[in-house]
Amino acid sequence: MVWSEVKYNYPMWHRLSGLDWDGAFRERLAEVLPGQPDWDYYRVLQAFAALVRDSHVGVWMPAHLREAHCSPSLALWPLGERYVVIGFAPDLASDLGIALGDEVVALDGVGVGEYAAARVAPYQSSPTPHHLHLQVARSLLAGPRGTAVEVQVRRPEGKEFGCRLARDPAGERAAWTWYEPLAPANPVTARDPVTARTVGPGVGLMALRTFGYDGVVDDFDRELADLGPIEALILDLRTNGGGNSGWSDAIISRLVQEPLAGMRERRAHYSPALRSWHQGENGTGITWVEERMSPLEPGGPVSFHGPLALLTNAATHSAAEDFVGPLKTGGRARTVGGTTAGSTGNPLQFGLPGAGGFSVCTRYMLLPDGEEFIGLGIPADVPVSSTPGDLAAGTDPVLEQALTDLGRRPE
Image 1: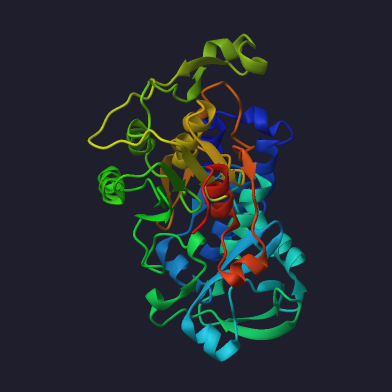
Image 2: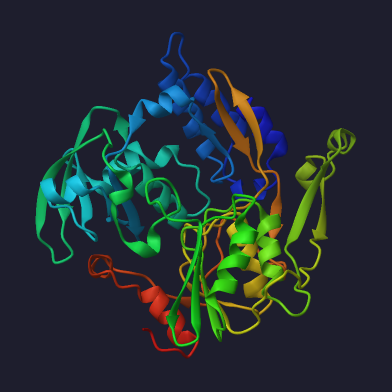
């Protein structure tokens, strides 16, 4: 099913000219053995789906297998190809000395690069190298629940030490220590999905951590109103993995005074007859029709029309990229930080034996000006990156640069 649904629904095979999908399928069949444990079977499927290099094409484990595997109470983030600590439970600080900005350099005696390449990266469905590093960071420490991993850690100043991390996260998760700019909205962080505060004279900062719930537009309206009169606004999308682009479009409507060009879509149409005549794209029977999404019109009970900056990085993904694209391309906002993930696509979802599942991307989206971003990401107008020292000190050079770019002085 994974082979056939991806083959006939995935709209961007031009990105994968070097991939022999049918041949890869035959190779993976040889790895599926009679009596094979479910975990091993699903890992074969995950590695197969990852060949498409799209975060909307992927396989997820059944719940009982997911629950049998976990990570220690430690969150990592990629800085290039380095993996640094951005969050941890209290006991890791008191018992082991873990701190923000610490870098994991080896696991179980294996260098982190070699470990990631062999044991983690092959199972991650990612469209770009920078998004792959993010997915690796999130899964790097995972393993069977109840086991432990030996980790070699390097401080920002260069000192190294080893520690043993149990894969049995417990304790008061809301009390974790976090590098605040990269703390996502979930039960671990206890952060609300939309929050706002002032960060300088007349400057509001709003974190939009997801577009994945039906109250996000109401929450945006409330937080914007609560900011009161402001002259400039910074929207932080650095942990926004997407959700529903209809809701992100509704928020764009609060930020524009004139209609703003929407994203474009190349939609595939398949004809078996054209295929039999060796017509269509490369004789596949597929023809393409490019469609413009409807313009994004002004509207809503609250609005902001002053200078606008967007903070982005590799975790700015899917519907969040549909949000960034029109605002950046249309000149309404400047982006500061890093390149976005590079994937969006209205996935079809299917069940698999044993209560697992998989999804396949169905949309080929373009920026409003027709530029490609899938498999590339949307680059920041003002590239800024953090260092382990920034994480250790709690400083945020991305936000500071956005304030400078808006002509404001950081508080």
